[in-house]
Length: 176
Image (cartoon, rainbow, N blue to C red; front, side, top):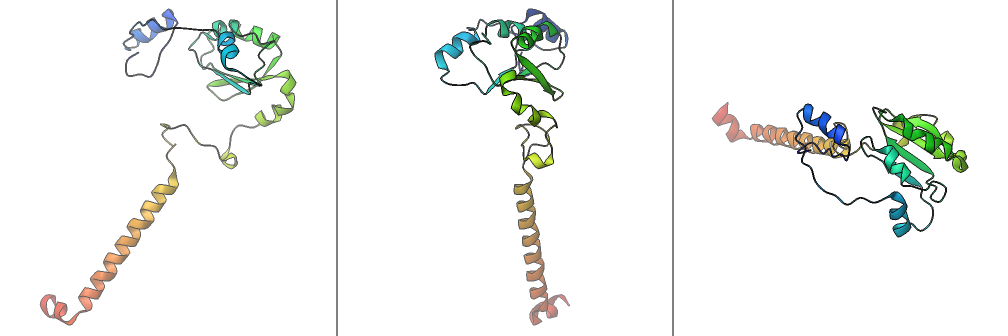
């Protein structure tokens, strides 16, 4: 969908976005299952799996053998939860819902239950986390504070130089 950053494989969702004014351009893309991707690329444990597929969570999870591949934590972006049926196989495979941050559901493998306490509280000021680039509040403050300090120092230097000039005898004679 042009200039929106959105894409989908769900024709119904594409129609909804078009009704909202987005321009959808159909494209053929190669798809693969997570089983195939993991078989080709994974060596060792999968600690974190993010699923962000605009309503096709069930299809993605059907392509992943959760008995073979046991991501410690599965994060699914599901702000509208319009297909809650995808959760049943995830829960049946031994994953527990541990957190919702307003956009993403977090599911922890039962064998990683010792990590559940990390989800008891939402991120806070003391966690030293960073907001994603592009978020209205994501810009680091330190460079801005440094630029302000430099600007204030230049202003102070200019005021000092002006006082020094005004103290010169010839300046007083010319400008009183």
